[in-house]
Image (cartoon, rainbow, N blue to C red; front, side):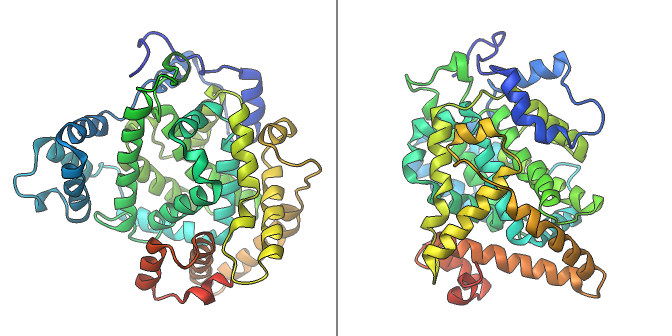
Length: 417
């Protein structure tokens, strides 16, 4: 399933000059030394050949015993815990005993605060993740290769955005990462899917392990986790959402735990913002440059706002949101990257320039008022749920369940996005 351990994949640092250009916006936020030393660089290369050993072992057992029989057991444990299964099979018990033994560094109050800060970001947070995390991330062609081979490109950008947004919102509601909660279950479901994909794609003749390493490897999972945490925080600064040091620390703590549940090894988890930012920069240096898949994915994502389920003025709102997303992306992706992703010429960063200053002033003003911060959190949560409804439409079964739990009227909420 992987190349020889003493041979690093060809993708590792395949084009350092271009990688430095892509990573330049991140480097600006690093205090102190930014470059990896030889040991760090070697470790990043090795991480591209490493999977998720506990989950990979569990999937081997589940596949051999039959997924039709083992999946219901897995899902039941997600909801009720391993102790709810009398005489649970040993591979299942071994995995969940490890998962349910939460790490010593985990702080329940920090998880709650991290979720509240994610709500505080409102629609701005969702746009940052989409444009600075996902779209910019499509320049990393080696990560795209798994999407190509699994047929995920055929699913469509709109569906991928909707499903990822649903998972993110589930994880970032207060209590969402408690054992058995919807974010907790969703994260461990994604971890299982990653292992199934790793098992399947690594056996494909089209997968070149000498170049790509292992599908859904530690290095790429590390990059994804840092996009949801570090890029998210950088984007808030760029778009005028002021976050204190404690608020940023809480977000990092939340995503440190989510990544831990997702199967990212402890050595790649970060408690401190500058260390996490430096790690993201190092990871970006390792990524292979853009290729045809980058353009295919980027072009599809550009037009995704036109496919949303707006309750009214669909054409106008679709075009406006498309322009907003392109403008945000312009702040983080250089000219060569925009060409590689198929973004149109002549994009100006008008949205950040026009909206960041008043957004910053409004946030600062409201936080000085009694109950102002709480109002911003509640407003942000409503904006994020409305965004989700616009992505899915009212007919999606998981969305219907979400609305029933929250008591939200869909037509009212969707009209806000």
